[in-house]
Amino acid sequence: MIWDAVQTVLSLLAPLALVMAYFQLRARPPPGPVHMPKLTLPFIGSTLALWWNMDRVLPFCLDETRQALKKSGGKVSTFAMSVMGVPACGFVITDPKCVEYVLKTNFNNFIKGPQFYMRLQSLLGRGIFNADGPPWRTQRKTASHMFKLKELRGHMTSVFQKHGRIMCSILARKANKRMEYFDLQDLFFKYTMDSICEIAFGLELHLLECTDPNDRHVRFAAAFDRLQWAAEKRFYSATWWVPRALGLPSHRRFQRDVDYINEYAYNTIRERRAMEAGELNRRGDLLSLFLATKDENGQPFSDEYLRDVLMNFVLAGRDTTAQSLSWTHYKLATDARVERKMHQEVLDVLPTDVREPPTYEHTKYLVYTHAVISEALRLYPSVPKDMKFAVRDDVLPDGTRIPAGGPVTYFPWVTARLESVWGADAADFKPERWLLDDEDDQDEAGERSARRQRPDRLQRSSESRLWSDNENDDALDDGKQQQQQQQQQQHQQHQQQQQPQQMQRTCRSAVRTVSPFKYSVFQAGPRMCLGKHVALLEAKLLTSMLNRQFRFELKPGHVVEPKNSLTLPMKHGLLVSVQEQPMKRSTSD
Image (tube, rainbow, N blue to C red; front, top):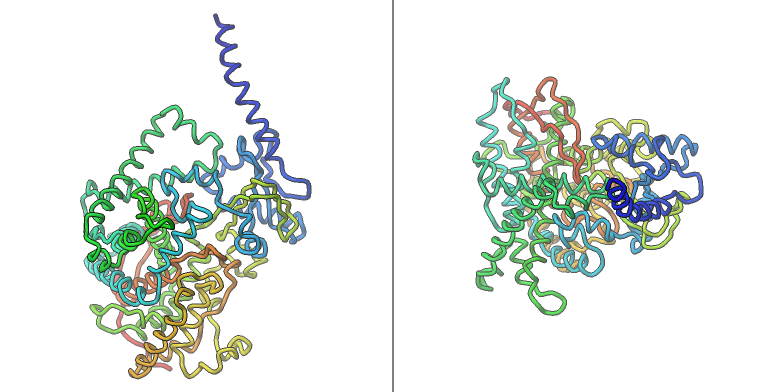
């Protein structure tokens, strides 16, 4: 009886063991001096090392990158890892030349791939972050119409202003109560959720003002967060599908969250489909744009397709910007010098009446604020890592051989901390690294000498160069001539208005141009993030509104560290108190 049971178990395990052994043989690193983590063992590879460092994947990869550089005499930063059951060895890249090769030079050979898709299918479906080829191109082309200059100046700016006013009113009620600490990250998540759902869904959620945990919008946001964390863990296990196959409690909880966000999305889509075509065309939200558009066969997009589009844009517009705002304000709360310098610029540029929000035009003059946000994003990129899969065997510029099917992950978080890339002060928070002073850097300033008397154009040009890869920028290339004419007309109207002296004083410096492969916080190449201009606009508008009126103090002893997720939230939130700012402008030139 016992022997029969043992035979049955062995008969079930034997095929699984053979499959795992086959995968592990394929997951061996290719020949050559490729660094692997110290805790790499036969058969299981780097599985233990990854699981041991599950809560500190980013510092772990930074340590291994430095070890790779040390072993190669500073020549190669790439290292390899293999996970039990994953059918190919994986590689971590941080060298900007390798990042450029994967994201642009040999773009068609590095795709999201089926392994990436399967792990994120429940959350993102076939949305833009989880798609390759024609489905990705279709979504990108359609969505690009949302991110044109007209939309940035108009609808999107008004949405950010509206919710920014609500945010300020909430903070005003909390101000000057030094022992009252609250989670600022939570407020940023509510702010960006309110904003992106109005832009994407056309819905007003009022999460900033909501205190009911059972509110359906609050439950949607909570379910979305749980799904992200669960999806992230799937990348560190070859057996992630087992709970689903066996119907284990962990999968049932996961599926309940999936069902809830699906119901939320499908109800919104059905309500919008019931509208007449004329009303759809008058609306400015992303869902209405897709409903008014046909697919390549001239047919309406399906509800499932629209659900996937919306989930992807919620991830992009809510989580990434909320985290960027959180890390920016964490650095401002812990660096008084930077905070004071930015506050003075804000007072010089923005209206003194706190009831009057900044406009799109004001953001062009917030040069130092731009540098602060850029530096916070450098050290704390909202997407700290991203994975591609090689279609065919390949060789990276540093000589590393990549087998077909091999995952290649680039880490902006790690690259930002490498002295070999960013210099000896790579780990320091230094907004000044982004500023180009016309008097100090004649080479770069010389390119703009013709525009020195037009500081607003100088700043706009610098801003566009920092946040876009014009070679692949669908949102700006589409209808480029017409858009340039509109910009010239708007600029002429703007020049006719007298600009305050304080505004012009802030434009003595411009923002330094940096390679998007060195600074890949918005990806680079053909998949450069469509919403990068929106993200910068939203961050500058809200950050300047808050800094004009408030100053934040971190709770003593509160630990701020990243949580391992698809994006980069703070593990324990951002506990702060808030005080009102002095509203005195500088009188010096």
